[in-house]
Image (cartoon, rainbow, N blue to C red; front, top):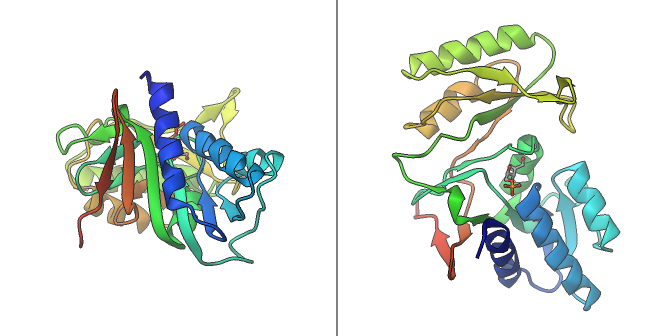
Length: 236
Ligand code: 5RP
């Protein structure tokens, strides 16, 4: 199975977690898209679910497939959210998310869900030795961006880390999130203490949300060349 087929296998496996009448959070990204497509098929076959999307892109995709949609304001408690990830740390299931720039809504929706199912191909699965190669996305307010980035750099330095902090670009201009924010990609190379880093970045004024998801994922479905592995987050 190539990476695309692995993503699809993980996405289809996530349907096991969806039952009749459930309230479902829909993630963002190419793997989450495959789950939305698979869910759309089930809806066509008669499954009733009410879904809350984590981005405008996922909302459009789900709407086109005839999936019933809601918002967190109307439906503040969800049964399950299914989403992708940029990296998954084994075995704690700490995630790096935000490659698609939707990390803030993704985290709010995930934190409003009884269960969070992460779907991925095996390239996303990392160990303590390899976690953090993907640049950590952080959403910040445009107001005072340079000052916020300076504080982020200092906070990262205090943890003995460093690397380039780059404002994400799109079509020659800063990428703007669905919330009107900017994304700073932190090229750290390796993250050894994700919880500490999450705490420090999250406390900086101007940071809307940082892309480390600690204690949020319940289960990861990771597809390899053969089967889909089911990894459960150990009890806290
Ligand atoms: C979007 C995300 C995505 O889940 C993450 O970037 C993985 O995307 P893909 O499935 O396309 O590899 O966090 O903000």
